Structures are given as C-alpha cells and as structure tokens.
Amino acid sequence: MKPPRDAAVAASSRWTDPDGYRSPAGSVHAWLRGTNQTVCGIPLSRAGLMRFPHIQWADVQPATGRDADRVQEVCPRCAAGMGARRDERPWRRVNPRP
Ligand SMILES: [Zn+2]
Image (cartoon, rainbow, N blue to C red; front, side, top):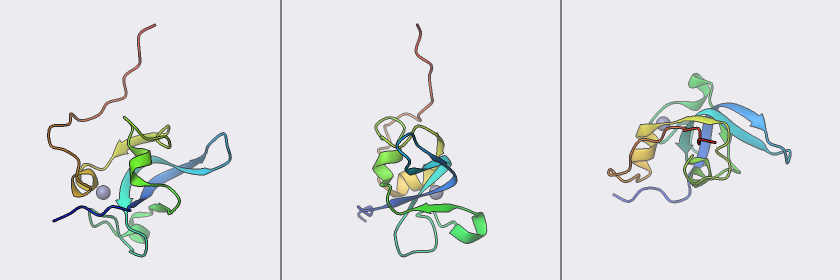
C-alpha cells in the first residue's frame, strides 16, 4: 500500500510565526484534506485538533521541515502511515554545544 502523498497537518496547538502565518505547534498528526480524522484514526473534533490545510506534512518534520519550530511531538503512527523509514531513529531536540 502506498502512503498518501499530499497530506496536510492537524495539531494540538498553534502559534503565529514571525511572518504572520498560522503554524502548527505541540503534537502534530498527518491529515488528509476532506477527511474528519487523522491518518492514525483520531477524530479531529473530538480530540480538539486544529487543521492546517496550508501546511504540508513534510514541513513539520523536525529534522527537515520549515514549519516545525514549535512542534514538540510527531505522532509515530502517522509517521509510519506516511511512510517513515523504519531505520530512522526517533527524533529528539538536542541543544547544540557552544
Ligand atoms: Zn497521528
């Protein structure tokens, strides 16, 4: 089965970035536009998740995404559903040494 290509994002929280865009924060899930639940099966309204139709799933991946500044947790089940590689290590925020 192929992972969906064009997933957007649902998140537990939001913030406004310095450019004035509404961006996801907190825990993020993959979400397919036009559906009422996340890729891992959580109903958006019941879980209080906010939709970000203008944000791509790839953009909230902390290792690579440009909209991941306030992302604290990427749902592992959504990541698996979106085709994350099994050999990738779980991501942690690490403070670089001075
Ligand atoms: Zn999820």
